[in-house]
Image (cartoon, rainbow, N blue to C red; front, side, top):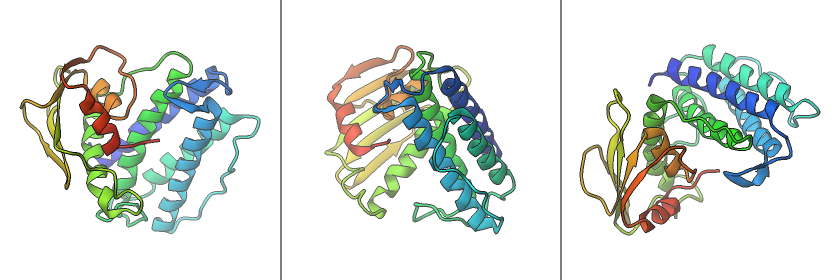
Length: 248
């Protein structure tokens, strides 16, 4: 996926999040984030979008918009305004603009757009679980999202406080996407003591997961799949994966 596609995914995902926030009870617990209410989730993701808006402004030299830290009495409006501001800043910023990121390897607006596209997709799903109507992630976005997970885990040993993540004891996990017309949806992941080894091929793993690529990504993010995912092998491998990759 390219920069414009990631920005478009942010826009669509944020709009779907806002609809869930508008329809739901702000005090309802989010099943996939049980320590949070729907309002807590909106606050978390809205603040994250506001943070990246200011990061983009620092990189481009554009003036930083004032952003309220708290949702106040109209959380959907608050969230929508922040999301719209972030999308506008991405569209006013070229992909190669140098900005702050947590990645030691990539300090570009392109990195930020990709990260926010996938964070928004997962938190949109979270918000929809609070109203009982979760929708799958677009297959192309989910495929790119799985690839981004591998990139993130590859950076963990370079980022403070993440040194214990990203490492396993040699367990292997095979992912097989079943979506028609989508290429590149098969992976073999080896969780080794020195980090991940990812191969994009059909091969036997200690655990194999077979299903729609959206559901595979949701499982990697420790979210429940919407459809059926076939499992073959040692399901303890998923517990090992959740020690390798953590996401809030």
